[in-house]
Image (cartoon, rainbow, N blue to C red):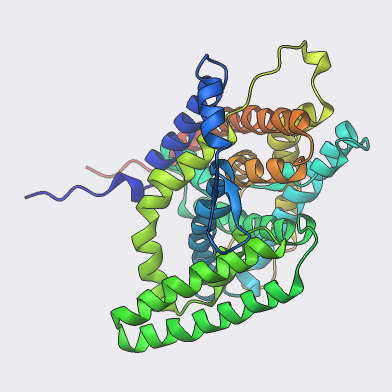
Length: 389
């Protein structure tokens, strides 16, 4: 009997699912279904005995998305300790490229939307969506050498680290340090329990970890620091074996439910009935900064990194391969959508237009990267030696 691999653990299907979910969110927001769905998403659900009283939309972005960041943090830790970033020699080249992929989009954004009302959106075009980027690479990159994927993965992981720092530092409001201190205690207890689980594998320890994790999330959410940071902290401190098992168990749920649901909710915005010239500068800045700023920044800094690589480093990537990685880096999507919600939380009009900018900019980057990766992969397939008969 043939066992079929779960497509939700792959790269192509989750990327398509994300795109479909975002498209449906945008579609239903602009149909007569808008009011009914908007009313549902704005319905508040409170946790008795706590200060947590969030709308369903915020339960998705603050609660469910924390699980996604837990999985991301587990992958980050693995890559930093045993993967593509476990030594300075491996990390220096993608780190330099990632720096360009952050600085140039910020510069492009501020040149277009640096006014007082929109300047706060500068972090939005700095993100790279790992799932989307790797999905596009898997779809169109047959024939590309594996080191292109390795470079892109390291680059996107470093982008994630930068995005997490932005979320933690820039979007904390009226921090309740006592509650955050208690959350740190919760993280320490979670760390200890994960070591016990690694040693004993006892079910009660796993249950205790789940309880401590939820309590820690609640403390972070109540402290004024964005709740997704709880997922990051918990994922980074887990013992390796339980962390690997947790990631494996959660991956289908994250790819098949949590991320598509977030994409639907985040993309549920009304397209403004105005002329293009009346759109916010934030919209245009993101539309340009994601596909253009990313490809210029990653390609330029990546090329420089290859020229100054340390002794003993892997052979330099051809500039065309770096260009392909730069095009893929412009697909911001998940983290960019979250950053758009946070950057313009107090202005619904600009927020919605910034979200549209993320969708349009990411779509343009997706199309551009599909073309560049296809052409580059085709070149490799043509250049490959013909096997002897």
